[in-house]
Image 1: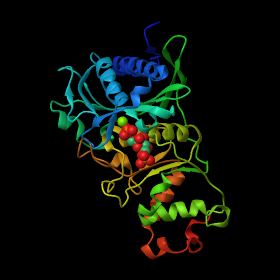
Image 2: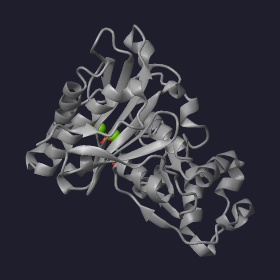
Image 3: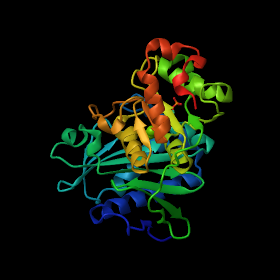
Image 4: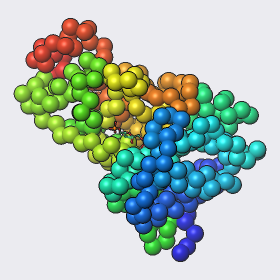
Length: 331
Ligand SMILES: O=P(O)(O)OC[C@H]1O[C@](O)(COP(=O)(O)O)[C@@H](O)[C@@H]1O
Ligand SMILES: [Mg+2]
Ligand SMILES: [Mg+2]
């Protein structure tokens, strides 16, 4: 087997060692997932965000920490660790990672992923991570699906690399992907409908009403329960994803974490021409105030994400009116 690598032609020079290390970690994790050890979905504990951990969550965390040892990182913050870990004292970068996203899908052989965000390192770990989300200098994800792809942005467009099984290297397959603007598909966990805030219910009601409703067209729906897989589908063909805040205990700020999940996904989506908000305001205009803090997340085609924000601006009486009255949202 050759040493895993990535084509760095379009990677800014200062990020090359980091991208090579991430590619190494991703190729190794893709190999672990492919081997299909069924014990990897066994529950092993709870992380500080309060989520159950599976064996593969822990293994993925250890694997990336090891792969990133000499990659110029000063700090490594993981969804699976209570606090950031000090790496190389002279390192220029602070990296936040969700080593395994979508862990409820491990045992069913459905796509899972890794999400990462890179910030300039400060002397202290809290100053490195607790800051405006827009300070991000690189971010992306890896999807372990039928194809393993690494998607990354360095702030000038979004690039896609695909793992070549013959060489174990990531080839550049799209140097600048554009998120299609017009696809009528939404992704939301509809089992939580009764817990959602009114603007979200109204938006989804109008999609469900299809050709007979104010949107005057039919929509399709998807829910994979793997943020990375939804993000990749939307990047490829458009549509919208919503994980709103809801009335369940512990979901006051939704489910997804600002540092490890929402900021890097928002970065990649914005850089591909899409939009990402908390329902109303851009995710990247927000601040990271808590390592494991959460935020509602809505992202996808710009026009659809803007429309969700417009539902938040409606007066309450208008939001709760029958869809037929929301003349504003026709078409
Ligand atoms: O089970 P739910 O509430 O639909 O949540 C699914 C969401 O939770 C997540 O699995 C959370 O990520 P982790 O697996 O990293 O905890 C997202 O990938 C996904 O979008
Ligand atoms: Mg996750
Ligand atoms: Mg995770």
